[in-house]
Amino acid sequence: MTGSTPEPFTADDYRARMARAVRAAEDAGLAGILVAPGPDLVWLTGYTPAVTERLTLLVLAAGQDPVLVVPALEAPDVAHAAGAPALTLRDWTDGKDPYAATAALLDATGRFAVSDNAWALHLLALQRALPRSSYVSLTEGLPMLRAVKDAAELARLAAAGAAADATYEEIRKVPFGGRRESDVAGDLADLLRRFGHSQVDFTIVASGPNGANPHHEAGDRVIEHGDMVVLDFGGLVHGYGSDTSRTVHVGEPDAEQRRVHDIVREAQEAGFRAVRPGAACQDVDRAARAVITGAGYGEYFIHRTGHGIGVTTHEPPYMIEGEERPLVPGMCFSVEPGVYLPGRFGVRIEDIVTVTEDGGRRLNNTTRELVIVD
Ligand code: ZN
Ligand code: ZN
Ligand code: ZN
Image (cartoon, rainbow, N blue to C red; front, top):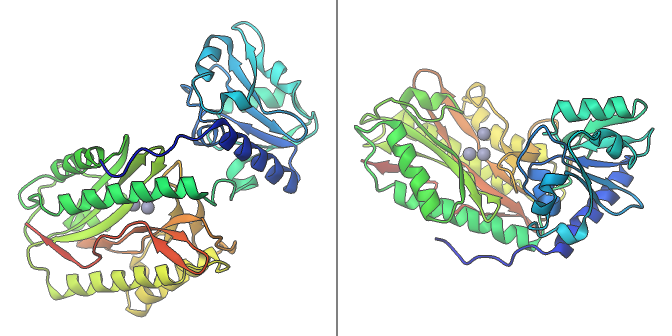
């Protein structure tokens, strides 16, 4: 277990987040925000209901208190959420029309941001109830709503990073050669939990040629002496995400394996150095990519350089060409360049970085040198 349990978020914390969301919606010309169960609802209220065909929907709109439309049989559960005191409940019983009840709360001709993971079932029914309303996904309408983290969120992300780092320090010591990728992945999951993760989201162990596939998870392949092995793992600690990658080698690497690893390490460093307030997200991608392209491997760096992290492990802001929005202190995202040589091997190095007042700070701090494992 890494670190101590943080102070839980309070109803006032959630009240402030919901007020901020309403202001952001107004600034964006939206009539309000509709939030289905999922990470946005957790972030705004602390409430984590089961996702079902029964409508649960948070309605945020200017000039009205936050309303949670909730199935009557689940209404007692809401009280357990820390944000409950900040919510007005509008419960509905089976057989009643929850969409008509929700429509009564909304500007009939308004444009609303809807959380990305709302079910089509619910949104289509709402559209039928309010034919003159219109909708945009929350990520499209308010992409940066959750992007800037406050001190309490940063502390949680730092704790998650430290727990992932502790996992790497231990996984380096386990045997790799002769074991299946899935065995090492199991070790990773055990370690993530041992160091404080309540949820393991991914344990990528991509050995030899499997490393050339950036999202290869872990399979039956037996890891061999001479393999590069991409490790990429993370999950949630106190509700906030970890995500780090290191590439290790089983036994002594050859000259090209070393060279590619050096290039990716330099690219990761260049991406990190590009992090400062006011720089564009795409500048981070450009800085990392320039190193890899300059070394002749540009066509083998086949993904964006990074993604935001918070109550999920993939969210805005994205470090990608074309994303011109500026970095702001408190943003947290990955810097994870890679090189993927089809049929041969891959290398990826990933840290979570947060934007400070004058640069960036890494939340992952294990060595980025090529580590030799057994
Ligand atoms: Zn990914
Ligand atoms: Zn990752
Ligand atoms: Zn990542």
